[in-house]
Length: 275
Image (cartoon, one colour):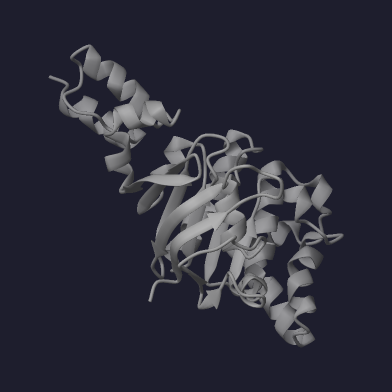
């Protein structure tokens, strides 16, 4: 069974005239990396909150995440143990006086033995390259360091799924690269990842992409297939990855035979065409 198995999911905010999400179907397998895109108001963040058990669906034919029924009284609470959620602003998730105290917070809430907490904190400090920052106060960290600390804190409690809601939106390019590299490493370790993003180059990290519009899923498939749908991208107010934008301009000038999506592919294509 998929770790995420959702069919006909609906959600409506209190007082709203229309559903924020309507008839959403989503199946995500163990170890899969799925990106979710769409314009503002499309329902991306609402979906992230539902997957993390932070809100309860209005209804669904099926709404199971890690075996928990999101529509049940207990299920949308139990899922929080198996699903970690990382938001845009790390300051909203950092609670410890130091980096190591922050990583220990969730483990202490589980009442784990002190030696197990210490072992797990040491493991996460090493895994996210935070050891030199162990005793640093979070407010003294760079944006990328704070978000990596928040990510490490989310995953200090063993998770089966990681949901990220635009985790790089508040970061500079260096911090963004740090966080994306950390997420990619976790995916390579077998963690199931759902990444909500408006950055089209981040979509290329995923195995599959789901596009939302008006609370409905309007596309599902490989990233390359989405970027081939120029008319759909325009309708959804989405663009191409930066390297693909350059490649498209070169194609229109006859300097490139086919569209490339990444910078490495663009450079390789240009070199291959050099006399």
